Length: 187
Image 1 (cartoon, helix red, strand yellow):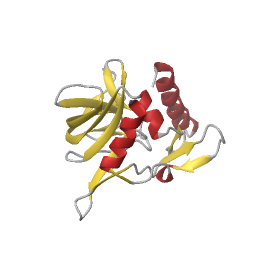
Image 2 (cartoon, rainbow, N blue to C red):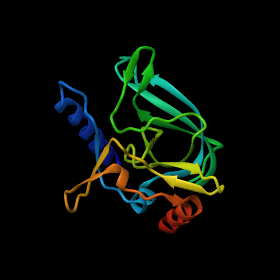
Image 3 (cartoon, rainbow, N blue to C red):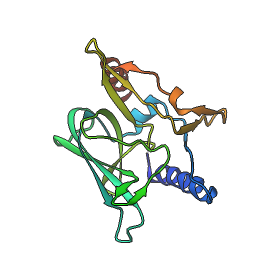
């Protein structure tokens, strides 16, 4: 994602929140992005477990909170790096102050993830805010499944201009199949 696309996504969220001035935005609206686009446009694609979740003020004005996710990397699917990578995202809670961005996923330490990451101002962010974060769950059989559940996200297909519920965008897939598919896009 280039700077223009990053700011366009951020501007869209800001307009949603400002446009609803009286109330809270109930959903995040994003442009449809395929797994292939996520793979090609991301600088890093990692699998791993969230080691810690930290909330920090974005700057000295103390008006906006960001979440820092420290991810213990199991595999660099694209790119290279250290044993951990820090991912920044909008929103979080510090004390009694909460800065919630509708549709931006919340994470817990210990969760296993696949992240598609872009670099902006020297830090890694989730590609397309919510679309580039896939959870991994282990079934009773031991098989790992990748999914991206987006209940508070509306995705707009740029070709048809149709709104699609976020939870219908990505189908659950076995982790090895998902990684193989992603790798086929970046070769």
